[in-house]
Length: 347
Ligand SMILES: [Mg+2]
Image 1 (cartoon, rainbow, N blue to C red):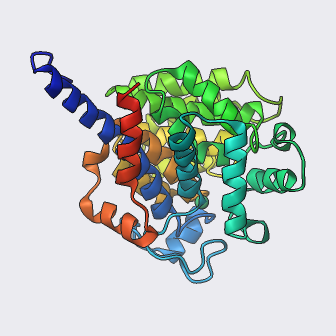
Image 2: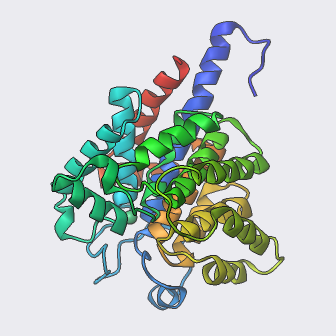
């Protein structure tokens, strides 16, 4: 907390530093979660134990022949971080999120990676971006987008609206229009972005949970009516599992079996919240669990990492990890965080 007896310039310096750490922590959480989960993505727990007999505790390359990440190096990020940074770029350029801006950025990025011919994109983004590219309107393209691609990239909506959950949901709905314009996707993405928004201003995990539930409830009222299990009820069930008193590995298995770790919004998003809460908001432990647990590991790592990273701030990330992520991917997350902080403090 800021000491109010400090001189005014010292208060603003301290405030700026606090905001910076939260923003930087969120972006580091996304990138580290994505890169840690990259090697085990789309594997079930049995496949993971067979391929990695020892628990994964560090950044590793993709195993040879990996179904979508073959050839990727230790510490390499995937579409989760890339799309998150596209949204940051958009906000830095326009100071707001617009559906046109989101569609333009995503389409340009997808084409630059030849993503229509590869397995880089998730199912909703692939379908919608192909439609937009063929001339379908942005407002129509995302009509059945219901998977977790909306949540993996959404943390910037939480970063730029600290503690203002209604503003978060509004931004999430706009961002989701081109690719994930369904109530279930907007609910899942709003839950994550509201949890990030809460983490920007709170050091209380209950506040994070409440914000997550609020986002899920409000997001469910928006977008095209679609189907999917309740994010709120799944999240409540997932929180029950982590409080069952079972061992860590039994809890992982129960989460995998009862909540699910697939690309569906109602699986990966409640699971991510449960991991954050189980590890008391520690992004390193949360992300390690996501990488070992199975399923859509990179995306679950990125989502859970964004919430835990906002909650804990950047100080908990070891320099070695920060340097590896920066070097392997040639990205400067610190610079992104500094530029976002400038906008936030001048608001
Ligand atoms: Mg990915």
